Image 1 (cartoon, rainbow, N blue to C red):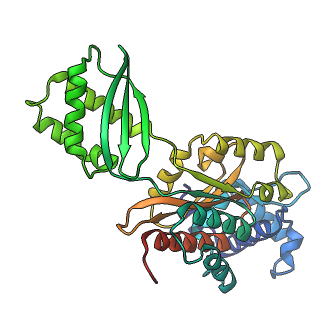
Image 2 (cartoon, helix red, strand yellow):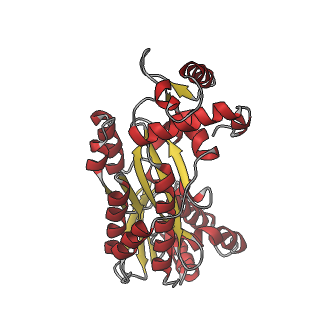
Image 3 (cartoon, rainbow, N blue to C red):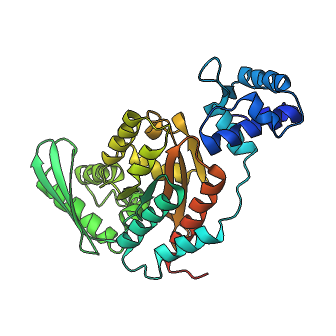
Length: 349
């Protein structure tokens, strides 16, 4: 992220020229010439051109062709978003559409989140991303099955009826008795706990109970925990609005195709929620700031939503070209995330 102190180094005229160039570019998608700015500023075109050259030297503006006007660089857009952008409240019309789309019935979470995705895409004219709530059902039963000397299977039965079979690499020389002992230990400890709870507490329990467990059983449990931590099923990601990205006049078909290929393969999607969890409220990623969108040159506006325990369980976001109307889209994403959180956790108001 750039240092917004750079803005304070600009004089008032330079800051105003920079702001107007960015706002015009975000509105039209076209490079901005000095003559365009003279219509609203009481300075000459030559003076504005000199200011633009200084801003270009600082890396905030660029020009695609020798005779063309200027447009903001990725650094310039980031500086504008962090230091100059004014995000207003969600308009009454947008708020009403979001609320009507979500409805009052949150019993079918999948259907509700699908509606959220479609509403975001329609409102913002971009592609929407909605990460479904994490599945945190308690574990009912755990069983280890040896498949080969270097492969074992753990069968996880959850309280909501889901069954997951996951293959992992056990410690060398594991025995049938050690596998039974490991399963018995985990089943006694796992009752009523989610996998997340187990990951946080099982290591201490193993240490405290090491005298009751042989070395092989303890190693099996440790192997299983490592597998649970990194090899779970991908959370469901809902994507809507491919046509919206293709409709933007500056959209590059090949780059948009790369973006959606990555999304459909769920490449780096685990990072999506992690990005949202790194800070409170809405986060904005421009171009290569997010590796998932670096090839397509897109921007991502994302916000997490929480359950009744104030734990982050999912996220909603919008993808579009770097010239997104950030001032309008940021409050829409923020409001949608808050509303989804209230629906998920059954809170009112």
